[in-house]
Image (cartoon, rainbow, N blue to C red; front, side):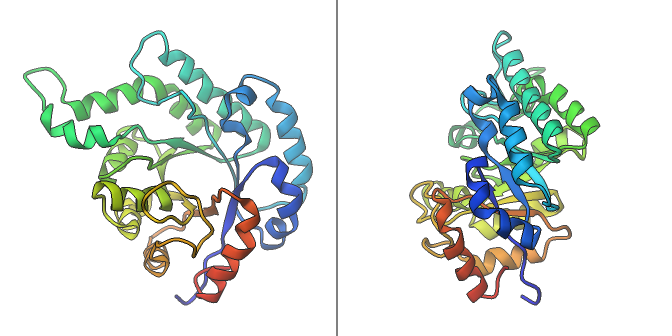
Length: 278
């Protein structure tokens, strides 16, 4: 690879004093992960925003947040509960506005069950197919969120969780007809799905996402569980993954999402030694 890619990180505000110089020195991309927790979203999130902004004085990289996902599936079809979920994502956009963040990560609604049963529930007469219902349910929850994100200049990126077929998320993103909805790939989730449920390998996820790929969580895994290990500690084929990323027509944000943030330097040493990133 001729030019190593620049890597950022997914961190909490509490991590920023440790990694501030590294982030600002390389003007790396940052994803703040404080704001996925319900108690923060429904509490005093402004103090977290203020603390983060103070610690990020001088930061010029791209800033995003991980949006809500705990107990708030984007395809919920309960007419009483769905509006609560919509409001939760609207709080995420309030936080983006307060931070100056331009991206919010949203979890995919696609499950292993969906993959194995979509074609078992095709369209019958005027009744929608299971695939169509999944998209309609997600629109019912997220349409207002997408419209506001577009007006606000925030991109929602849909991250693979249990996804087996990479094109399902792409179809969902395209269904909104908005540049404010793009794709995210978590390398560890894709690697797990490849080994445990027969999904394609990680580099195929990257290639299939193509120009819609706007964000990548970099983490290593053994393919058995969602490990979030240091890069190089697991069995992901990193050269193939980075070659696929380098071949994309647009460069996504690349952030390490490790269970232990103190492993970021070790991950960077691995990536630099392999000539993959800086």
